[in-house]
Image (tube, rainbow, N blue to C red; front, side, top):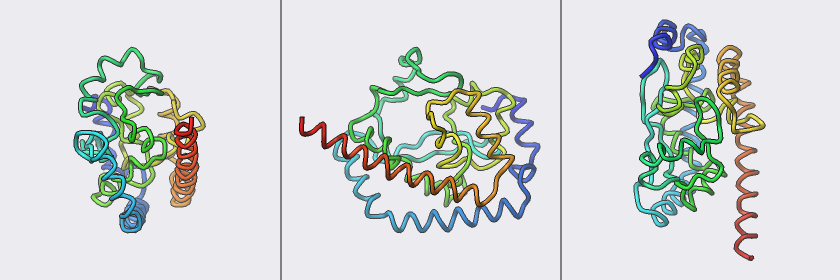
Length: 231
């Protein structure tokens, strides 16, 4: 749950209205919903193929729902294509000492819990496509602070809870940082800078950069797999 200080700080802001005007908040929601619905329709063949690949290559559900902290400190199920073994959450405690990030973030370059198809999905960013459903449901935005797992949220500094004054995003300033293995200080700085300086133009720029990054990673990953297969 939210630390008491963070709970007061976030909820006293009126679930986002204290950070952005009502017009800004509504404009962002309308933009997010329209774009998310369009993307779900356009990407439906790819979504079906990825779902089939996950189902065929490893036992377990195709979609993984991870409990995250969202707007106003409320919990919700953040959807992703499953990229890990079924018992990944149970194995996390055993891997804490191998965490390659500092503070309230857990990252491993070669996480043994990740499946073969999962590595490709993560590298390309396709694992997060189901979060478009979270956007349509009003639980997430296309761009915003990342919704952190409960384990990471429990380690956040009290002043970092302002990041929950807005909807969390599929993409955002943290994901686009040059070094994606960021520490808690940089994570908080990027998230709060986005919250304080938001504009629709910033969202469009971030989404454009995210799409370009995903395409680049997809092509790079395919090349690496082809090279590995020929050796």
